[in-house]
Image 1: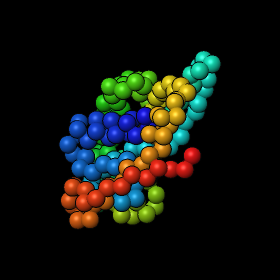
Image 2: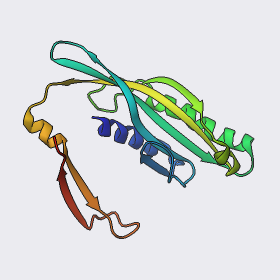
Image 3: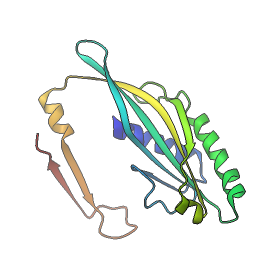
Image 4: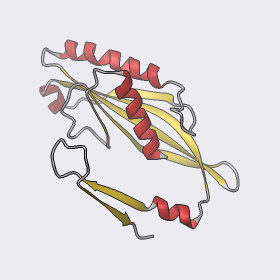
Length: 171
């Protein structure tokens, strides 16, 4: 479900904001060079018992926005603020068509580093909360979950996989 949520959030943002020309699902902003850009990740959360057989995962959806403008800080701020407010409005109380609790905004903060500032960037981290229930899974379902599909792209810019592999993780 984590991958589905990250993908749905990223798709929602990049579809709604045509100015966001780059987006990735990842832990941080390394490698995001287009302007403006967004990275989406669920990197933490909590688990609580709902019933004897059901637990709820409450995940924190983190959205890192990066905006670059070399004309100065006022231009950077006036460029990123509409994106921050727009993403809150876009995702507020949405379930994205998934079996999850509606997205609830939690907080936001500027996370621009000195290096970012020097390069003309400003970064904001937006956080939403959602949750979904899990129950005990059959061995067959667990086996499917630990199977990893790999696709190899040998030509830069080519969206066609040249070969694929399936790896089964040790239990």
